[in-house]
Image 1: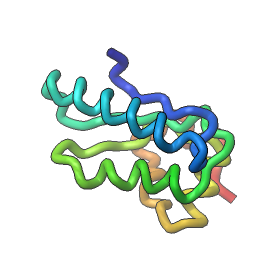
Image 2 (image 1 turned 90 degrees about the vertical axis):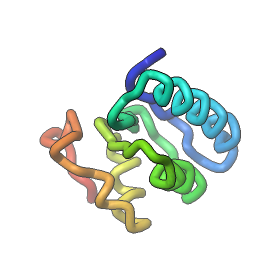
Image 3 (image 1 turned 180 degrees about the vertical axis):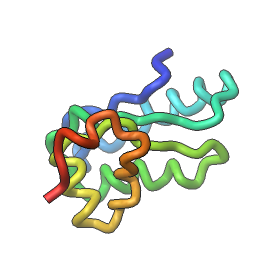
Length: 102
């Protein structure tokens, strides 16, 4: 299974259930491998709302910490707007120098 979870391009409420199911299956598989942290990529996210961000916020309740390794401009803007700017940690983002949140 993939070591990084690639979030879908649509992270709105309409796809929240299917994204949650895929994410939970991936988290379970990663847990079996004994990973020290989980990595998620939002590089392809084009549309996002509060439910999409809540889905990722739920990861913070897991034993294994997670970090974002790639972010689209739309995802970065939503994080900044809704108070999740701390997820955009430039130490881990592969494209941190390529674009910035507005």
